[in-house]
Image 1 (cartoon, rainbow over the protein chains, first blue to last red):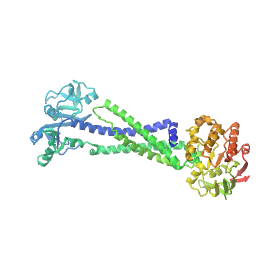
Image 2: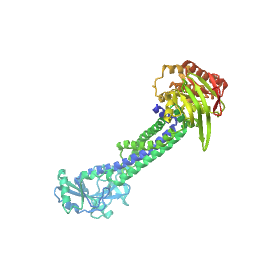
Image 3: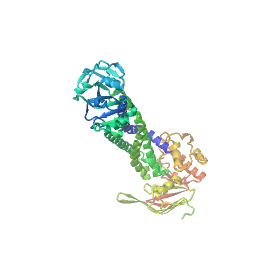
Length: 369
Length: 227
């Protein structure tokens, strides 16, 4: 019977109910989009790193998860390749570029393709040589987002480039330039951001890392297996992101609380007489409170469902309009977290109006016009 | 003090506090109602009729005096105790019908049955009451689509669904035309005669009061006639 009363109450003022559900749904969408973006960026980075095909990554000591603060001499690769079990050492320079997630990568095309395998071109092909200062390779997401075809001119790093090739996405970076050219343009002459090692056998990965950590020459460098490196890319390891997620979650709870509190408070005012009627029929304070909380519960569940639907809308929009800039994914486990967050907000928000309703004097409530 | 009475009231006082002023609403009411009586309570506005109903119905506690309803002393009763009294022992019929506007007539009745802790299936006696009230074919309508007379019949059905010991009708014909008023009063008398339902009815109308077995008159918070 409680369910019937709650349902009829929601149906009685459909606009109020729908607006409340919409307002509860908005922070759910925000939370899911933010989490989707975080996971999308991490998964995209992991996928591109994995596709490089290296076994070990060597980075400068001052580097952190998000960027390599500082760079290494390119010549380090020449020393690394002489270590036991190391078959190849390939340096890559990463440079931030406005509006491009993960920035641009500078590579020695011949060496990189030897380690990683050839790029798969959907249009065109690689730049003409290591000193080609005219051409740039972009991946399909970047090309889709900017509606670029092979041969088109684009502006990057404050100069014009010709797109010589569009390659299949999911490898290294969205924009790839010759290493020497990028070094010159970013004033990193003969420097690389990180060096990838290809071993004679992946089973020797830990042995190589152990060796480098023991050898005083290499102790100052950060050395990871590719798996270790990719495992570092989690929200928990990126402190600002983790804190940002918590801020958004808190905002979600507060908005859910405020919307429900306001909506249910108005509803309680409008239904004062009905509350009096229920009390005259023997409805206890707990029964009245239960009705209000049940209504808030439905608003919370409905708002979460709507928020999930809207997050799919946002995902589609981002995927369609900004596939290269914002790699967003849908994270279903967060639907349940979002439901929990929303229910905390809505039930807390309904508590005050619910208790107000439960404490109504039945005679005054019955006399309410 | 029971003496087999359904309602036994002695020296009942009720004082409301409005701001810093005490306003006496009842000033020593004595009343005994035997089971099965149809009692009309008349009196001018402000004479304390509704307050007396609210106390008998457990909507508000007495300030002093003793009030025994169906063997239960109300003076010592907690809020939860009075809620329980309203579930099964007393039921109200109001001048403004007071049906829940969002629910159908059937659901209005079902709410009362649910709150009384009864099964969802109506008893044969209640089916008989529905037949008597003549609203069986209007049960799926919401109050806004029912006439005043039909709404009051639904309100009576809702009040009786939990088989209360006492029916408190507060100006049940106050919002009805002559024809519907007569029909509702006849229903109340019929219920009293057929089922032995104890009924207390507030009314301003002497013709309506005449349907009762006896009439008591209240003035200035006291019963002044027909004790």
